[in-house]
Amino acid sequence: MIDTALAQLHALADPAKAAEALAYHKADRPYLGLRVPQIEELTTQWRADLTLDDRIQLAADLWQTNIHEARVAAAKLLTQARITPDQAAWDLICSWVPEFDAWSLADHACIAAQKRITADPARIDTVETWTQSDNMWTRRAALVATLPFTKQNFPKDFELDIRDRVLGWAAGYCDDRDWFIQKAVAWWLRDLSKHDPARTEAFLAENGARMKAFARKEAAQYL
Image (cartoon, rainbow, N blue to C red; front, side, top):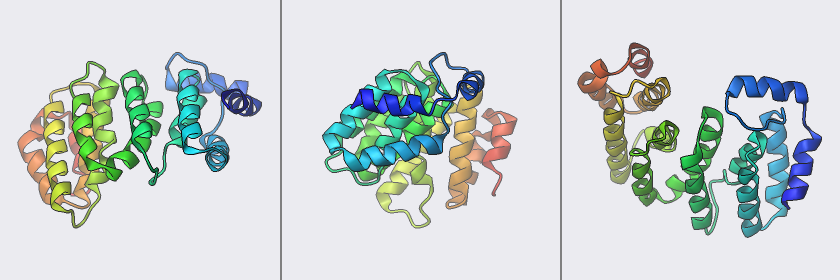
């Protein structure tokens, strides 16, 4: 499976765009120069043709290649609301999190993680461990992977509990001067403000002075 998948990815390679991608993403790994829609077209077909076990194995193998587009494809293979059973998919995604080293791959994988966390909110306990990582991208992933919990207009009690829990993580991040961490806090708050302005305003009143100015401004964009 992996040899066929890699052959299909390489068949679409564009060396000029690959060089541009390396310069843009700045992570030292091979690039093929594919656009995301090209990758999605392939993964849609693979998902239709493969059993769940084979799909998880292919995702694991693609990630191990360290090729940017192959890792995007790995994440896309597992980005699906309904996967039954899904523990193996969740475990595989979690194994990727410590390896995050750039925003693009982290975000693609986090979108896959979002589906698995909303399918089983108890997984928030695992996500909380990411907040203690030495890897900035792993800490950031705790916020990106929980973005769906900002979006309910009428959240259930457990969703409010998760919302408050993640806001606690975000408060702990406010003293982190890394731009990507500050941006992630702002992103979470900005999305939350559309559905729960009161919590957003309270957070900013308590913690906003510790945020960078750009992040504070972005977080309050819709208030």
